[in-house]
Image 1: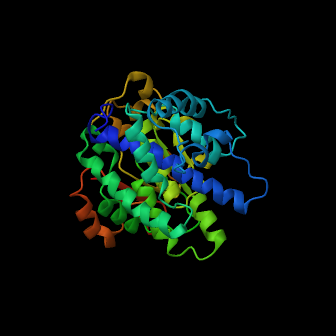
Image 2 (image 1 turned 180 degrees about the vertical axis):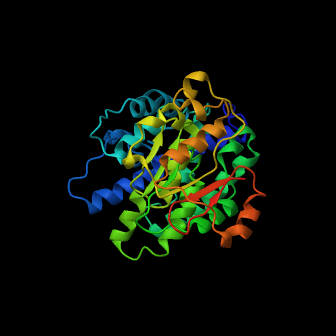
Image 3 (image 1 turned 90 degrees about the horizontal axis):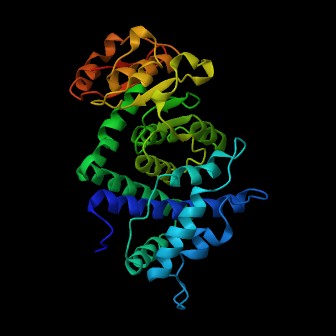
Length: 334
């Protein structure tokens, strides 16, 4: 047992940043093989394949040497990667992901053992990556029992149901403004992938997925989830939805579908409330998110009478919300 890890939440966080670097390394290998002149934003000696692999020749870092490397070289460099407004999202995501992530391990020998196990997974194989994607979602489910981390996970049965009820189509934009681990977004992607028959369809599909998450741990969980599901667009932003003035949204900021579990039970300070018109201001986090949704949907509609049975079922699931903007749209607000 690593004395630096306290409880399931920290153990999972430790596991996730390692999984992220491993799967990102597999994706970079894929991009290098399919794109002309692809250049990694990670310095060569810090790429997973160049420091994590153990060739059993006695040269792999372990113990205090490994801890020193991770804490003072790897993390420091990833948090300080040079990015600007022109940096592609899939490259800038590295620095963003590690901004507030920590290495909790204090036992370099145990850390080496974990790294070796993760490195045995072949994420360069499409089928194995997708199989592990299913396993990864089971890891996320454990968060329900990991203290306050449970707030980041909405049961898959719920996210799948809500995605089916909105019935998004390829070409429609889909957003979750408090996306947590990305459960609603992955449910929407799984549904759409059934009809994505061409490379172009898949590119349109993945470009249409948009998420915002303000907490570092679920943000890292979410982008790792996206990579497991082959979403290389990674339009997932580390930000606070409520920090932006809703009056500044334009048509470009609107979406066809909003599929999310608005945070509830929280209270917002007055400076956040001022981002909303006086008649919509509230100290309740949930109320403000509902206002954001109204501002960011392309068009609001009422619930069709044919959907009353589904509506009744959703009323039994407190605070989950699913909205679509077309003529056969559904809106559920318990």
